[in-house]
Image: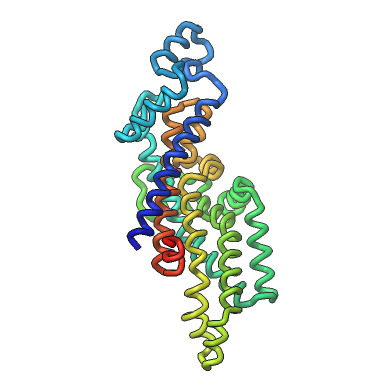
Length: 317
């Protein structure tokens, strides 16, 4: 088990290094001039050139990457060019906000999606299965901002049940914060429901058709016990990896949702930093999201290996 975990950590570190290279390379080829973006369109070219020299953005790309990566190793994510404050000071509250939204959405989408997939698998081929499958595909195919706009119109404007913005007033209690986060969380639930439910449904159908399930029925065990003890335990294993990927998406892939609901999360911060060509803030934000993906995926791999020893031993071999 230790060998397997160390192997996964090593792969995660290699992925992190490659991610840092890709993130920095993409940020450097974004259109626009850093000095011009900071000083504005009316600044003289001499001032722009002087600021680029001061910030080091006129140096060779490899030299810029080395300085940036050296700072990362020491825990320095850089300084925002537009606001002149440490990038982490801006990322920390944004990350906390995104984690709040991710938690609310997670607590809704995972149980609902797994339940829908289990019911569809147990009713394979029936009207219930077809209804859940078609609904899931339809919601997944709809862009996030379209789903969000529909929910805002229905529950925020026409019915007036929920706030149309996700940003709760400063000092709001827990229940009030959850109330403000419900609409974006429901948007994410509809978007992710189909994907998680389909994986769960497919795993349920496979488990129901397996030899161990037939053996359990031949032993005379009641259907409820067979499903609970044998089918669900094996069918839900593949769902762990799917849910882990969605957690990473819930933390850092919510640009459209955060913009639509005016929510000050890390997705919105990354979007704004890219628009302003704030390279240190942009690269730091994307890197934090990437690290979140890697950590969540690593935890899912370890948990999957604990629950399914065949994966663990096969990976080591």
